[in-house]
Image (cartoon, rainbow, N blue to C red; front, side, top):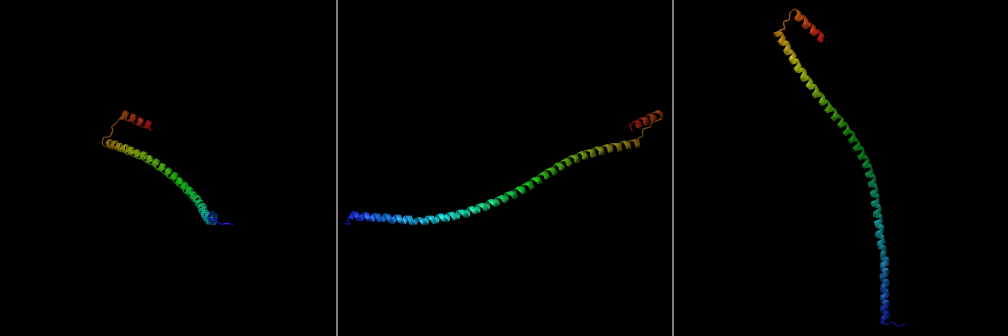
Length: 138
């Protein structure tokens, strides 16, 4: 076998190709290690996500309870406000009635004092007629 330049160049190129292919093939295990690390990290992230889901669910339950309590209290407040409004209206009516009664009392007192100062003088038939009218009103 004779080694000429072409044969030597071909051998050098073939061995270089085999060498680079081998390096590439065995260096692939480095990528496999990175993939394994990423899978482990992914599992950790998934476990954190699942734990956050459970925490989120418990927080949602707590929120729903608090919201229902708030709604109940809002209803009670609304009822109390309605009662206050009704009581204010009743108070206004009662105040108006008291003012009316005060006015009526004052008029009655004025009439009484006027009659005490200047009594109506009726005699005989007028007196009897007046008494009958007053008795019929009762």
